[in-house]
Image (cartoon, one colour):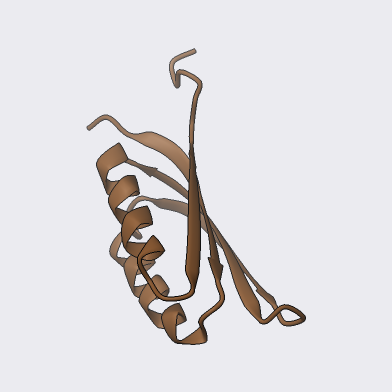
Length: 85
């Protein structure tokens, strides 16, 4: 299986979307390297950073599903260097 390493950055503004974000991340938990969540109370947002090692289609699908949620922004950065180098 050919995988890529990526970082998915998520900002949640709509509190009602938090449970669905967590559900989607749980579905990909086998691929997640690590995760950090920061509640930013002054701005009433939650910031989540997820490091993942998975096939590109799984990463894209996860990012797309999260990005469709109400009040959620997502950006994904993929590894650009050759893993064998």
